Every structure is written in C-alpha cells, then in structure tokens.
Length: 185
Image (cartoon, rainbow, N blue to C red; front, side, top):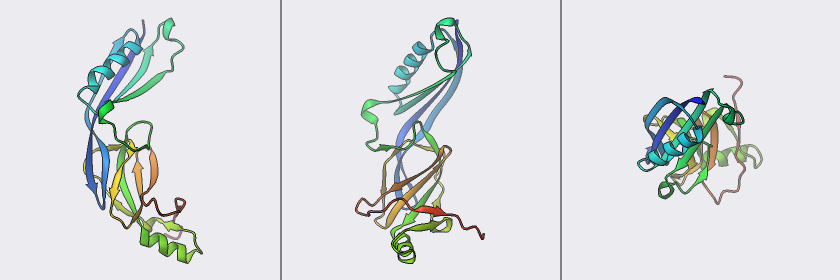
C-alpha cells in the first residue's frame, strides 16, 4: 500500500494596490498537511474537488513515503493546481503555481525614454532606476493582471520563484530592458 504526505494550500483571488499599480493576486487562505494511504490519484481528485468549491485556487502537493508496486511509475512528488472555473483571472500565466510576491518594481516611461536618448535608441537600466514597493502581507501571483498609472512602462514582479517583467504599455514597441547592475557600488 502506498503512503504519502499531502500538502494543500487554498487561495482567494483579490486585488491590492501596491504603489502605482492595482494588482490581481492570490491571498493564502489556508495551508494544511496530512499523511494518507491508498491511491494518491483518488486523494488528489477528492481534495481538489472538495476544496475548489470554497476557494479560487487549490494547490495539492503529494510526496511519497512508501510505494506499492502499482504506483512505482509515478514521480516521487506530484503537484497539481486547479482553478474554480468561474473565478479565474483573465490574464497571461506568470508562474506554473502560486509564487509569493516579495516586492514589486516599477519602471517609469520617463526613465526608459531618458535611457534611450543616452544609449542611441536602446534602453539600459540600473537597479536604482526601478522603484521598489513591498506588498502588504502574504500575497501570491500566478497570472499577470495589473492596472497601472499611465506613466508606468514595466512592472517587475520579484517572487520566491524568480522575477518576471510585465510590459504595461502596449503601444510602446520595446524589448524588455536589460538590467545593468552598478558594479561600482
């Protein structure tokens, strides 16, 4: 008989203001862990079905302790997330699973234009060109949905799983700027 640890995290969708941005985020509602025996796929289906009725996003992680022969072909660890269908954000995916937002960076259009003038039409940014804001509480990002002031060209989402740049001006034809770290500091 297979024995495995199950970790379940449920999230609620909300919108928060961070600096000059209104950002679609997931807020951690509940986290629980338990040990099970039997078929892990049955547990996975049951947990997702039962939790998704009250939550906007459910993440289930299963890690094997011992396996039966019938489950030898499954990976050591399985992670699966499900949306409540009607509650889904309508935006591009940023991460395969919720990532805790550590800080939000803002790059203003004025700074991009100054950089382009300085570098012959190419934008080159340094760390000090990004305005950093700390989100309130524990918030997670999954999909890129944001509303910003009109002078914001890029948002930088720095998370526990890496960073993502979001271009906010669709009429601005630029590649994401390369971040130049100031080596003299």
